[in-house]
Image (cartoon, rainbow, N blue to C red):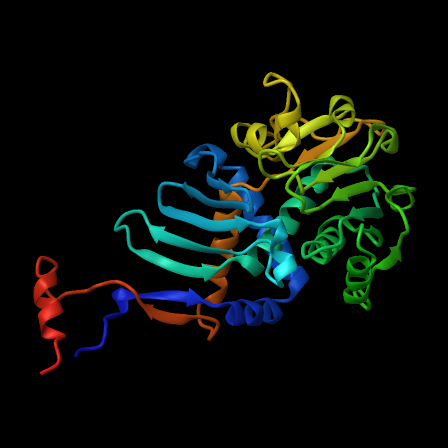
Amino acid sequence: MSAPSDKALVPFVSVEQMMGLIHHVGLEPMMVEIAQAIEEDFRRWELFDKTPRVPSHSPQGVIELMPTSDGEVYGFKYVNGHPSNTREGLQTVTAFGLLADVRTGYPVLLSEMTMLTALRTAAMSALAAKYLAPEGAKVMAVIGNGAQAEFQCLAFKAICGIDEVRLWDLDPAATAKCAANLVGRGLEVIPCQTAEQAIEGADILTTVTADKRYATILTDNMVGAGVHINAIGGDCPGKTELSPGILRRSDIFVEYPEQTRIEGEIQQLDEDHPVTELWRVMSGEVPGRRDARQITLFDSVGFAIEDFSALRVVRRRIRGTDFFTPLDMLADPDDPRDLFGMLMRAQSP
C-alpha cells in the first residue's frame, strides 16, 4: 500500500502540540499576536461570511458550530458549553477547529481549540478594552475565577497595561487557584471576600461566570460612572450576568448583533436597543470611549471570525516546527475518478 501524498496530509495540532507551541511563542506574546490578527480581520469585516453560530441546545448545555470565510479560506469551530461538567471532572468548554482552501475545498489545518479558545477569548476581551477602557486603566476586577480567569488577567496585562487584579468567586477554592496560578506573573493579585470588595477602585470589571441561567452578578448600584465592563459569561440564550439597569446606563459594544441579541446580555433588552459593532470602532468609523464618565460595556459572546483569526496564527506559527502531525484524512487516488480502484488496491492479498 503506497504512502499518502503530501496533498492528502492535513496538519493536525493536538492539545500537547498546542501547549508546546504556546510555550514556544510565549503565552502573552501569543495572545498579543492573536489580538493583532483579530484586529486585522475585523478591519476587513465586510469580506467575511457572517452568520450566528448554529446551536443544538439541551438541558445540560449547548453544542455549536461557528463557520465563516473570507472568500479564500473557510473556517469553522466546533464548541460545547456544559457548565455542570465540572461536577464530573470535565471541562465546561471543549473545542476543535478547521481551516480549508476555498479554491479546492481541501482542509489545510485541523486543530484542538479548547486551549486556543481560552487564548482567543482573552485576546478579544483585551482588544475590545484597548478601544473602550478608561485611559490609564490599571486595576481590573475579575468576578468568576474559573478556567478563563488567568488568561483574561494576563491578556489585559499584555495588551492594556493592567497591573492589579482583584479576584472573587462564589467558590473560594477557585479564587485561591487563580491567585496561585498568577504568582510571579507581574501582577498584584488581591483575593476578595465579596464581589463588592473586588470592584472597589477597579477601572475594568470582568464577569466570567459559567452558570447557564439568568443571573445578576453585578447589580445596578454596584457600577459607577467611568468603568468598562467586560461581560463574558452571558453567552447563550437564558444565560446572563448583568442587571438590565446597568445595560440601560451603558454604551454597549458587540461583535455581531444578530448573534449577541440571541445570546448576550442584550437578550434582556428590546430588539431595537442601540448597540455599536466593534469592527466599526476598530476601522475608525465610529468612536469607542468618548469621555471619562461613560460606562462602556463589551457584551462578548465570541464570534467565528475571532476563531478564524486564531487559527490563522496557529497555521502560520507551526510552519517549520514539530508542533503538528501530518494527518492522513483525505482520500487521494491516482485517478480522481477511481476512488473504488483505490479501495480495491488497498485490500490485503
